[in-house]
Image (cartoon, rainbow, N blue to C red; front, side, top):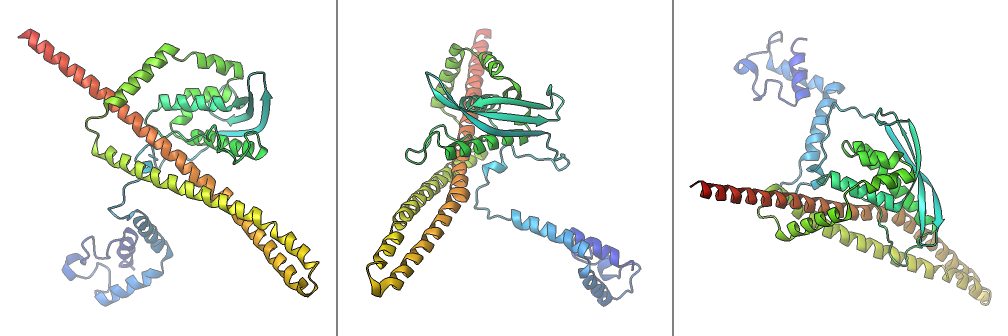
Length: 378
C-alpha cells in the first residue's frame, strides 16, 4: 500500500510516521493513497514492526546512542582526542606484515645481548622488494621509538616493553622472558605498521629493511652530540619555564591522564601483589599433599580421612595453578600495558607543553622586538 512507505521510512530514520515533529501531515488529514482512517494507519504501522530490515537499522542507531550516552561528569578519554581519526570510506587493507622470531644470544667480551629476526612482507611500492629479513637488538627498537617521538611529538607512540625487569620475578635470559619480550616487540612493530601516520615514517622503513651495518650508518647521520645536548638543554629550560596559559581542552586531558595514571598504577601494584601471594600460597600448599599421604601410612584408623584431605589439597593446588595462569596471561600483561600507555600519554602532553612554551617564547621575543622597533621609529 502507498501508506506503508512513509511509515517505513519514518521507522528507519527514528522519526514518527507523521513527520519530524510527530504530527500527521495536514493537521490530522489522512495520508495520500491511504484509507483515510487513522485507526487503519496505526494498524499498518504496527504491522511494519515485523519488518526486520527497518527494525535492524533502527536498532543499530539506538545501540550507537546507548554506547555514546555517557554521563556528562565523566571526562573524555584522551585516546578519543589524540590521533584517533578514522575515515568511513578508508579501505581496511593491510599491506605490511611483520613477524619477530628466532631470538639469538650473542656473547662478546663487553656485553651479552639478544637479537631477533624480523621478517617483513609488503606490497607497497616505496619498498625495493616484497620481502625483507633483518636482525635487531633491543637498543635498535629504542632508537626507532626515539626517532618516532622526535618526528611526531604529539602522536601516541606504542609502548615498548621495559629494558629492565622486576628483580626476583624472572631471569634476564630466561626462555619465558625472551618469549614474552619477543611477543611484545612484534606487537610494537605491528601497531606502528597499522598506524595511518607512523607506518610511512622513513626511519621505520630503514629499521625494517636495512642490514645491521646500514642501520649503524643511518644512525650516525642524525644530529651530532653538541646539537643533541643543545636540544636537551633547550627542552629543559622550556619545561622549567612552564606554560603560561594552557588551553582548557588540554587541561582536561592532562587531568584525566594524571588521574588515570594514578589509578592504573595502583591496580597494577595490587595485581602484582595478588599474584605474588597466590604463588606463595601455591608453593606452600603443594607440600601438604605428600605430608598427608605419608601420615596416612602410620595411622590405620585415619587412612581414608587423610587420603581424602590429600586429594582435596591436590585439587586446590590445581585450581590455584589454573587461576595463577589466568592472572599471568590475561590480567597482568594487560594492566601493565595500560601503565606503559599512561606513561606514553604523559610524555605526549609534556612534549605538547614544550612546543607551546617555545611558541610563547618566540611570540614574546617578536613582541619585544616590535616594541623596540616602534621606539626607534619615534
